[in-house]
Length: 67
Image 1 (tube, one colour):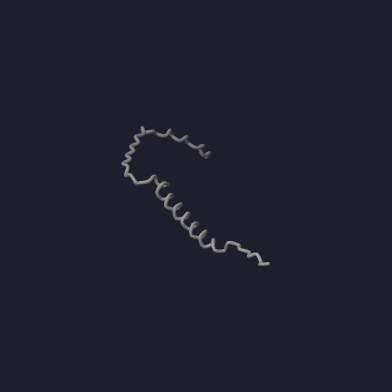
Image 2 (image 1 turned 90 degrees about the vertical axis):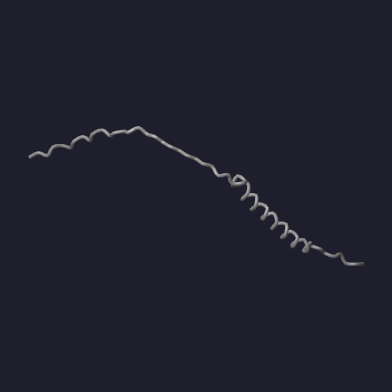
């Protein structure tokens, strides 16, 4: 009676490593391309803020020193 061979699938470990590496490379590329909005567009943002002049009220004088 022949003995049954116990095959644990060790040959698939190399393939799994290669596929995992490809998944990481695709994820990094997607993060760079999609995370930054794809192609970089130069935008000219010009913000001008004009605030009215505000003067502070006069500070109250301290207590007079008794002489």
